[in-house]
Length: 66
Image 1: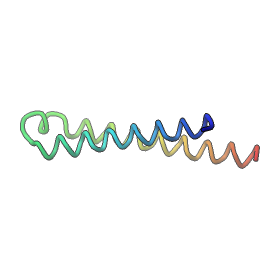
Image 2: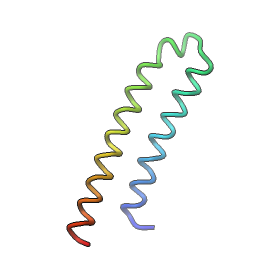
Image 3: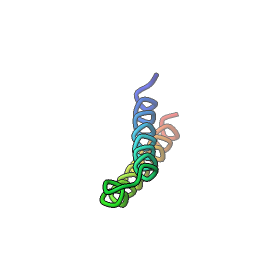
Image 4: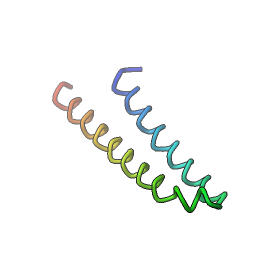
């Protein structure tokens, strides 16, 4: 596996992990959900943006060197 592929896999697993954390939190409900659901959603959006920027940057890098 190349370095750029490892970066992509890590970024995608981070996004998936945060997504599952939010889904499980919302499914369980309770005070923790009320207190943290918006924060978890913001984390997911931020990590998705980072993953998208990484994907686009790596695609640009490959097209320039490939």
